[in-house]
Length: 249
Image (cartoon, rainbow, N blue to C red; front, top):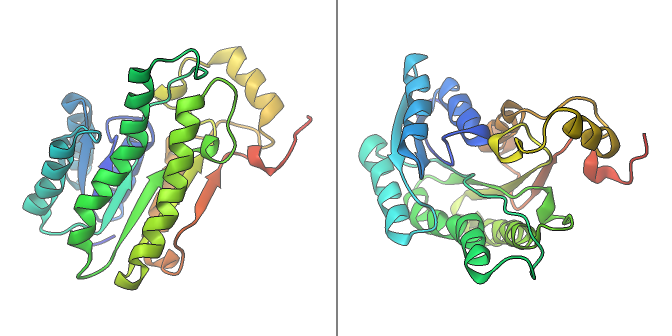
């Protein structure tokens, strides 16, 4: 990552914060983007304190003008964009008869439209030298759980959008892959904790332990590196074995 510039959306906490820190530790200059400026500023501050290079940018990935400004800010700060990690997302619950149109739109706008907008504005800056786009999709994009209609629909869209980007821009040496985490210890999952979390993982996740944001960050870092130069259009699962099949402990 030495000499490269990276944008990480949703960098204020969880997978985004861990990934921004990991990219910076590997030598990249990182734009930490998110809707809440205080949280992305904290991530950027941690990177700078550790001797890295980072800039915090407030950005709403569901807003066209905001995403355009994010790409401009990255170019202004670092002069290039080599990696875009579309990680920002929300995880609402509800069946389609339980949620209203506004909730549906918010989920699709952030989780799916946000990937479209950020990729649309960043790809022109990658065409001269190539680049990497990573999209957080989640295992619900592969196989849904009950009560997650909007989220599952959005993440399934992210996986096929990932494949489309990979196909459309491969000849310009732009790679695009999706990351599908299972249950990760982040603010999005903090409502399930303690004995409830242990019981859930005990019956659904073959590998013991809880996936940490840093585990996902390591996968993102590898996919963005030259070690993965021939990998594109794929969805990488990091879920402790949940998707391997029916698990009966």
